[in-house]
Image (tube, rainbow, N blue to C red):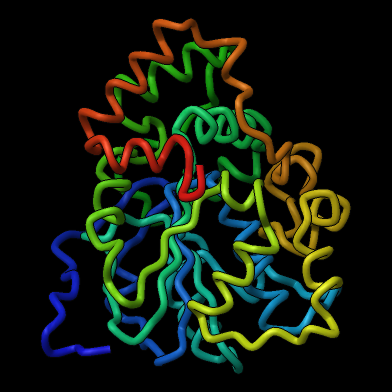
Length: 302
């Protein structure tokens, strides 16, 4: 990669809320082979962590993927604890972020995978995530010292209210959606960035896995390929959820299997009206442009 002629992204701001402490990236020491898995949220992050971990380790059903791949900019535990743990990792690291590009320190040497998913599907998954969060989740996010801004409150009982609030207030109560997408779409042609879509993983997971492996320079052990693929299927992950979910699912009622919920799209179809869905689609084009909006809705291979 030519670090001289390429215009690499530069961090321009910090992002803090009940979840984020973006300053951790300022003190993070990159290695040349680091893998960064980036999403808005509920777009297939855990799935991608599982895919990459299984390919790196040749298909191991006992991998504690959540420990191998921490969410670096989550403010709990604080960076004074998290950074030494990440620095102590041996082997190739894979780190998770939910930050937009302008709040992230960007390395020309690291490889970045950005996973996209239709905003309507994101919201339905996010609602399940939020609705089933328990008291320990709220205490960690709201009561741990260092929170900037208001606390996060329980969601409304009606998902339609949640949807309209998320649309009207752009990502409330989590973080802005449209800017996040725009920031990653803008750097999609950099040599160390790959865009992956949730829909394409659903349509052809083995094919997408091989594309990802080629991008990350991960050699595939063909004798282990059937097992690697099996351990990345939704059914296997659901049955073995404690291995891939943070803290084994302790922050959600129903545990890790609640975190890995359904893995399906289109649950909004029977709830949103035709007019509401059309309004979302028009907003996506307005915010993202036609090409990005089309990719976000359909994926690469539609």
